[in-house]
Length: 505
Image (cartoon, rainbow, N blue to C red; front, side):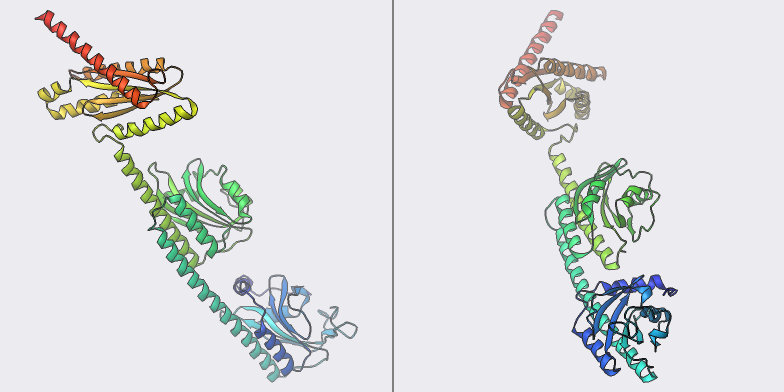
């Protein structure tokens, strides 16, 4: 038998999906209702069925153990009941060409059913999702009273289903409230964004159906996965997301740049952009902008459902937005901490690293030397003529001199520091004995002094250079050696200047 579908079949299947999700659907209540239907209507068999797109699932039964049975929809009379959305009685199935061939119909079968009567299970929204039906081994009719009893009992089934659905929604609302509280608490905990994201994603996976989720930093070339969480089939999708996923120029990229949240409930057809994500199983997706990083690249929280579409309910969207707030706060806090750390390691006047930054850099250089034998060269620099500029041109000009000299000290592979006043330091990693690096640093200082003189400042610079391990065994010894050599050069410059002035006098 073939039956057409009611005009609102998509809405009917969506309503059915809500009830299919109920836990422990079979139970004593349904067994009692099917038994009562059989007793009141004086029939040997009764059944409670759900009808999907092309199948019938028996939830409970009386007179025969049919619970859990799945039958083709086009072979069962309950299809007519759902199609007509009202009670259906077939007095003699054996005389009906649509069902006379069925193996359970007629005197030659093991069961020998002849009469069928069914009433639809109708939701509050008017969608028939299944039937309560009875069968008799006799050919018989059902009067209006008996049909009314069947419809009333079908209503009792829906009352029980709706009660369970309400209980599930209350439980879900309670769980959502608990999750919202847990997500809000994450904002107040002193942890980094990746740890916050990891905990938030774990909470979300425990409260809703997710196959994969991740904290991403987006670049035009594709996303960088900072932290992700995968369940089951999400493991294969994780590999795709960690590969090349070019986003620039897509609608998703444009929405992210507009700081929008994007929810896709149903990717039912291959998209024109990012088709490999669809090929990897993506069917429902959420994409929540968190904030832009200091380099302008945005951070997003991305979530995926694979295999079959599952729209994002209002409650789920609320949870995802709460998670985005928590992770966004952690990102903002981490950036603030980084700014404070940068400020603590930066000379405010010149923008170079300060003495603390040099100490940390020397600690790292010492570690690399101990672990890998890497050498380094340290230069200590004194800017000569600073007092003269302050006395003759004012302290503002003196500050300009310090900044100009600092700018001239910047070079590839060389890190410059201002130690305070008119003292600077340079650090460069070097292989071998560091002879080339020593010459490079000395030349860099000489060129920087030439540049500030070309700007009209009566200044020069003294420099002392020391290499580890060539001149010193560690950073402390290198600083001492470089400082001694710098002062030696400074005294020599003073003697030369005094000698020239004596001859001129």
